[in-house]
Image (cartoon, rainbow over all chains, first blue to last red; front, side):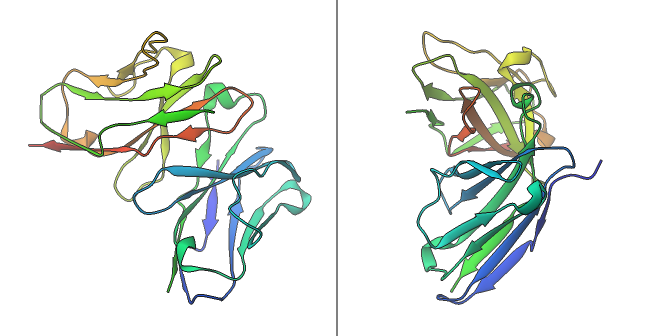
Length: 116
Length: 108
């Protein structure tokens, strides 16, 4: 079984530019989550999709962040325009609906975003 | 609000010594707790979950509702246990909330 795949693994962009991160969850996992770890701080929740619907987007920091999951498969997270404080590691995770408590989430390897 | 506190940023122990990684939580309901681990150059992965009452790689964790704690323990640390450990909490229908993590360093 393929795991959760994230692309790119690293991205360095200038302040004001746009970056799009992609996440391919495990096939059959309707839950998809985005998290972010800023240097020295905890892994913070950004957004939760169930299939193509946004179940919870309470963690999205501001309207510069836009997440989509067209067709309920892969998801993209776009940051436009990027600011210095957006630097960090962005994690994607997926899980089967109803099995979160027993199996937890499966995480991708993350995208390290550096805004200069 | 749900909160997870891991008071130690870094914990260094000698190989063969006991390990205890502390985790305290605040949540008014009945939480479900997890420990996740990230080894060097690997992705974050589930280590163990409260609901299963399991022991994985020699690690155990007991939920103490009176002290609102879920400390991770291992009687004899191994070098391969060196990693970043995260405690996490969910109410079941809310996304996982993570602590800041503790870096465990096992010294040979």
